[in-house]
Image (cartoon, rainbow, N blue to C red):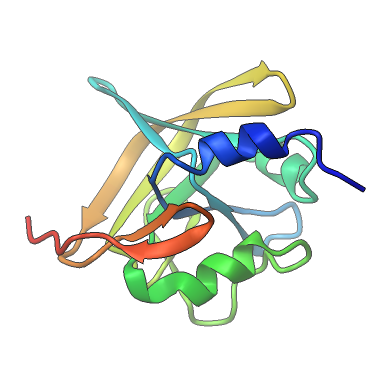
Length: 161
């Protein structure tokens, strides 16, 4: 079956993005994550971030029901985790790979930055929902970010500050 969206996806692939894993605690109490490249800063006061959730993904209902989520900005050496969380049916955290801050939403260890968020707003747009979160805690570490462009992973520059 041919993908009617392939030309549009090809155009989008020309825009390099960072790669994140957005995570929440599922209805069963277990941490879940999904690979996302639609993460954006929204505002500094209050501190807000956003990301887009495909309403057809298998974990959409869990994320739409969650009041908190966390965003882990992946380092260049986290490509394996990125691919796992992007694979249908592979959204659970492996024991010991996560940690939590204030909200209880899990963050991946080894990240170069993390944002612990309280859900501020959901906006249904097309076949996605934009989730806007207020940052309640964040951290950052020196490292090279994982970058995605042209359907391949690249290393971003070393970021020290």
